[in-house]
Length: 623
Image (tube, rainbow, N blue to C red; front, side, top):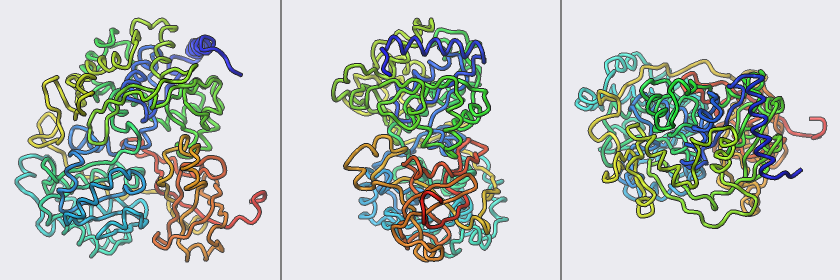
């Protein structure tokens, strides 16, 4: 039934108070999203820690950028999607695209790669499938799913053995090269070839093309990062970049392509479990003091770090978290082992969802709050380059709808925290964000709405007269000593393996017509018509072995459950691998069966590899 906003807000506050009184302050949690504006993401983090005083806040970006973000922070001292502006891509002589299908997942970036190709760039694609991006490549390395770390180590081995190391750069600007060298010298190329199922000569060719290039760029994305060792895989590619000195100048750098509307800005200002605004650490005493002062509270009042997004769901399942606010996310579809997540959410004493659509998560809610869309919101987002962009409202919001930030302020007022949430516009929130980020790694202090109405500004931008920083690490890295760090990590870890019962590798991803959990795109007639249902890409020989014809319904089973989708023959995918997009719910929901194994470094789930089996659906009711 419909209720008034006053009734809804009063109910939320009543339930927050009762849950925290009965079950503890941390029993009420907040789950955010990478599509929120910078202002909304900032305010959500402040709301959780000041209004609710809970340590339990995280967001769906944990499933997107967490491996690369953690790796960049550890290797470079700072996490920004690209170390270079996009305009540097056509300047590179060699480009490595590792686990990224840009043509379908970020198609607006493709002109940069077409221009690079026109300029003579040699493009290498690392992917188990021959995607539309791989079709652009000069060299495609169709590795076995989940072996990305080993392939990057193999590239590093060839670069070391064949003399492509930039010794001056390594000596002056890095730490840990000697240990890395000793580690790599012990690696055998035949072992790398066996693990990855990529011929050693192809790996050598890729390494030589990268090593010989005067300027080269390595770009990664979810195919490599959504693994139980995604952090290690990214660090191994960073080792390659550092060993050759191909970073910090035009046409040379490293990047991880973001997958959400504000995937960069959404992870900078406080909606992560361990983070405060400006990319500050919630456990660092000086960082806590600085932010507490901005927020007008004592550092002792700030909660400590919480747990990752999926671990929050596990705590909900265990009854440790009993109330949840979800804003800008649909975890029932986007989470790994999503059937478990749906069951866990139904155990909550109170679930409130703020969304513009009745998503699968909203359908489980006790209360759904209608919010404005991006077309009706004024605010800022930060793109993959680290460039802050102003997004004006294109139209007025409908009646009865509120902005996300208005909802947070209204709840905070009713909780007696109105003094800290007296904002009347997105610009006022941004101005406080600027102060909160000042002196941090993601420093926005020099960025103002007035300036953004004229130009887009790269952070860090520490004062209003600073031009911004399009290209990072030209002279020093962001660690206190100015040097980047090599990493000595294994190139293989125990993962879910195939066997006689589950003989195939299942990998997941996106398709051109749909976006993330599909909450928006499945409701678009034009986009839904392009791809109305999920399909399983399967090699014809594999399909015939299991009696599966083209267009047949297929039951995909893993150790966690089953999904039913229609078959699509693809003779450019590995015969031991099947691919299913994750945008659908119901019987087609592939995330019901994906692995919930978490990367120990960043808590990224292993979406991109699990063991599966397939069979044709003869009778949907009995299968």
